[in-house]
Each structure stands twice: as C-alpha cells, then as structure tokens.
Image (tube, rainbow over all chains, first blue to last red; front, side, top):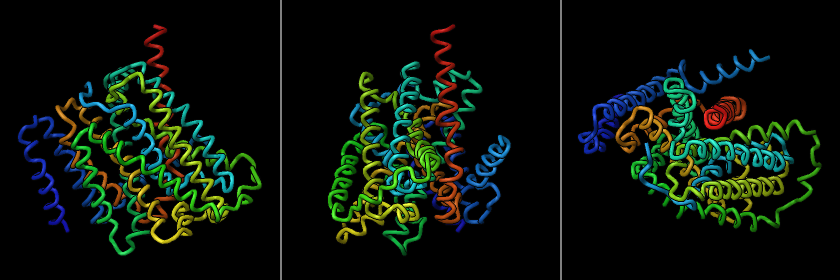
Amino acid sequence: MIILLVISLALIIAIDLRHLLAATKKDIFIYSALLVAAFMVALAQLMEWKLLVPSRVIESLVRSIIGGMG
Amino acid sequence: MIEEAKISGYQLGMLIVGFVFGSSVILNPAAVAYQDAWFAQLLAWLGGFVLLGLYVAIYLLSPEQNLIETLREGFGKYLGSLIGLFYIWYFIHLASLVFRDLGEYMMTVTYTETPLVFLIISFSLPIAYLVKSGIEAIGRTAEITIFVIPISVLITVVLLIPNYDFNSLQPFLEEGLTPVLEGAFNNLSFPFGETVIFLMLFPALNEKDKLIKASSLGLFVAGVLLITITLRDIMVLGSNIFRRAIFPAHLSTTLLPAEIDQLIAINWLLGSGAKITVCIYATVKGLAELFKLNSYKLLALPTVVLAVGLSLWSFDDLIGLLRWSSEIYPYYALPFQIVIPVLLLIILLFKRYLR
C-alpha cells in the first residue's frame, strides 16, 4: 500500500511537472510541504494512527473549552 | 494580491446557491426541531442574512482585498497571518468534511458495493482540474450547472404532492422554543455561516456594485430551496421519521417512481461540487496570499489530495461523522464564522472612522 501511495504522489508531481519547472523556490517549497502533509495523512490512515485525528483533537478542545465555561 | 480573473454577479450568486445548498440538502441540521425544523431553518436563514451582511461590510471596508489581506490589515502582520493560517485550515477541513459526506451518501444510497476511497477520489479529480483552471472556469461551471438544482427541487416537490400530510406540521412549537433554537444554531453554522469563505471570492467579482444584490439573491434562493425541501420532507415522512432518517431528502423521494430519486443525487453532486470547489479555491488562494506565491493554481492538486486524505482519516464511519457534525461542528465553527469577523469589523471600523 505504501508503494502505491508513493506511486500516486509521483504521478501528481508528474502531472504538475511543467508548472513546477517554471515555479519559484518558494512555490516549490509550499507545494512540497502540502504533498508531504498529504503523504503523512494518507500514511496515518493506512497505519490506523488515531492519536492526532483532527476531528478528535478538535472535539477534545471544544469539550474542554465548553466545560471550562461551565 | 489583486485577482486578475473575474466572475460576474450572476456567477457569484449561483456559487452561493450551490455552496449553501451543498451538503445541507441531504443532512438536515435543523431536524432536531422535529416538525418545527422549517421554523428553525427560517430563523437560521434570517441569521444567515445578518452574517452575510457582516461579511459584505468587512469586504466593503477593505475593497479589493481577500480575507487574508484584511486579517493582516486588521490584526497586524503576525497575528493576522496566524489567524489567516487557521482560516486556511478551516477551509481545507470543511472541504474534507463535504468530501466525506458525499462519499458516505453515495456509498449508502447509490454505489453500495463501491469502496468509499474510490468514490471520493473519483469526485476529487474534476474538482482539482476545475480549481487549476481558475476562478473564471469555476464561475462558468456554476453558471451552467447550478440552475439544475431549483428545477429538480421543483420536480420532486410537485410530484410528491399526493403524499403530503399537512397535519405532520402540527402541533407548532410543541416542545417550546429550545429545540427550535438548537436547530437554528446548528443550521446557522452549517451552512449559512460558512459563507464567510466568500470573503476569499468577493475580490474576483467584476461588477462591484452588484456584490450586495448578487450575494443576497444567492442566499435568498438557497434559503427558499432549503425551507421548501424541509417542509416537503416533514409532510411526506412525518416529523418522527424525518428526525430519525439519516438522509431524509433521499427517503422521501424513494416514494417517487424509480430513477426520479436520482434527482437528489444529482442535486447533491452539483451542490457539493460547488462547495468543495469553493473551499479548495479559498485554501489555495489563501496559501498563495499568505506566502506571497506567484500563482495559486500549482497548489490545487496537492491540496485536493490532502483534503481527500483528511476526509478518510477523520472519521471511522458515518455515525461518527454525523455525531461530530451535530455536536461539535457548531462550536468549532463559531470563532471562524462569528467571533473573528465581528472583531475584524470593529477593528476596521475603528481604523477607518474613529482614529
């Protein structure tokens, strides 16, 4: 599955390659950061890492704030 | 960053109709009020006009600036950028929630044997292409697709007339105002308050004098459609089934001859498509503004991939998604939709007129 994930990301880069070649360093940096984030999220989904699931983090934050407000 | 490509007032109005209609046609957030859900929706709709007025006022105080630029102007460079980053997170997270809503609906109703991931990825590709094509393409797509929504709503409303039971709407306010206000609060945050995202699109409007008219008309049409659908579903299903059904709009149209219920799926696809497209556009536009990039179009594909990943990772199943959407989302969205915009408006007013 991880190999499939890497191939998918390589495919995305291939689709954007023409634009990437003309992009500035800053553009490429943000693009890479987004791809890495997407890769990490997909990896977390595959490995069933549940600790940092956004909905759970937000839920515990909201509940603690509402609880704190009484 | 001044937007070069432009959309017309009509296209903006259509985008607002599609965006507000979006997922709310299927998941009715006002259903907690049982037979008074239409009244809760009416209150939320009126509140929606107030919120839209707030967002338009913010834009008019700093014209030609998108939300990120306005936040920087209001809160200062560093705090404004930080709040802008939170907004970008909210936009991409909203896109992931709509992706998941869409996938779950399709998997439950239409493509029961198809894996969720395949449905969501299939839907994400045209959206990535659309965002990559720019705001003009988004506007034109809305112009030629969104008008289908009111037509199909009208068809289902007329065809279901023999099934209407007007007694289902009574007794009015049986449980008092509390469930109505709860339903109105849920409905205000989803979908009316989500129109805060249009602060990223207003600078792309070519006819600035039509901003108020186009956005109000868009919200008016979307509100009328949502209330009509809620009244239809209550009268067809009865208040109890309406409250308990996961997809009440789909359930009521199953009473129609075969294949007509697919009109709901078409509405859902068009509305959700418009909503996710606007969310992804706002995300990439916000990122490009925040980091002063040359173009936002390059970021479209990785942003869509990230949203798809988040949509799959965030919830274990449909029940978890529904529980989170009804219990947590209204409070989570409150700062983005009301608190920060109100603060921003006060600061902008202070800077413009009182200093």
